[in-house]
Image 1 (cartoon, protein in one colour):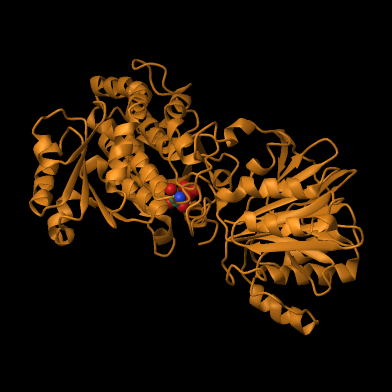
Image 2 (image 1 turned 30 degrees about the vertical axis):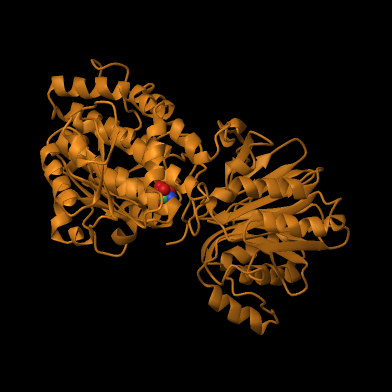
Length: 614
Ligand code: AGP
């Protein structure tokens, strides 16, 4: 949510800022703006809506900033105040000398505003951010030093922030800081890039320094200086990032989502490297820092997550209980944090998050940590806030996921849960050898099976087009694939805006069946195994109410043709691994419907890739 960029160097700043903001678009936004250091003042340009609107605005004024080599930029996802030009960042003090961009929420903004108004601050927007602009400007009047002004101001701010600040009187200087919001500095040759995330810096440099909470960095053409909140200089921790710029291109695919769906076989292969060598050897998971004795004695696990990660957690619960016989609770982080939870040092708490920045999950993790639980984090971002809270860190290594709709990170989370469950089962001795080996053998060939589905995607595309104009969609499943139904429905909902719902099929007759008629598509995730026959009966019940039946199945039963108007066949797989296979066609159905309807596949309305507000 929201994205910050900053640049100081010798190149035209506007191009770098706009390009950087484009790379952060996946975070979700509804207005944008940039500030550029010009001859004797700082010029600000803003626009509602997409970055194209800001670019048009900039084109009208390009003579004003053609020599600017320093600036800051922002995409805003509205929280305090509507997505208007006035509320868009950058924000300034009364006279426009001090300019800031901000990501996060200033919790004490009302109190600060009241104080600052008494001192003469004139507020123009409804944002919490403007308070910070006035506060830093006030400190600047006292100190005449931008870094010091930022340092003093941040001592009075409560809440989460990543800030990038410039001042008309301090030419060629950017100051940036953060608390509970991501921010890094890309380090180039005689130039620096500030950004909320790596995609904005990686096209220019692989060298970067992640800021830690409360650190303040000052960037000039002569170098950078890092200090702590007491003003003490700190050593700089510049690292070489493992990301390749190519990972951020669509590589010929029409959308990032389609590219990311196709990356899934390799994502799985990547995760298995070094952890699962062959069926006869034990899983190697050095990332888990619990001793074997503690693992053996664990009798309770809680998994907390949101959205797609929550669905991965539900599959995780199923397999950990099945493989290890340990009771597992799964809960949405947003619910978990507002009730009295029974958690202690004997509970393993697992947080699952693609971004590692989701505010609800982060809060939930911190609460459990304070109660003494061991925290295991499954994330795609080992550089994230959640990763820093981890006692054990399982990095899923799916590569940067640009599309807002999570696909490859979901698969990576699922596979991580399989490895974890197998690892614990081996330590506990809770699964017999034959079962262990068969799961491991089949897990290793899952990538080929996904490739088979992807090479036959035209039939899925055909199915998607057939149902693209529906207003509602129901997904049914039972057992281990109930989360698959939820995830399939979430994918469709978020990128096509069709009202899609996932149900445990046995629940249909307790209410949802009332909605069925000849206009309602019902997709049945009919994977062979313990609940196949039951689900077939539930599908018959739906068919009897004239629903438009679709099967997603690995069964070759000819009789299915009488019951279903569309059958999506997937390669055979044992039931316990079937969620990894069954989700692929559902991702594709959501993708093709969204694309067919002409929706914004990669950046669906109202959504943000990383949800940093509770
Ligand atoms: C996934 O398609 C969604 N965009 C969303 O539900 C997401 O999974 C959720 O916001 C959690 O994000 P996280 O995994 O980064 O914590």
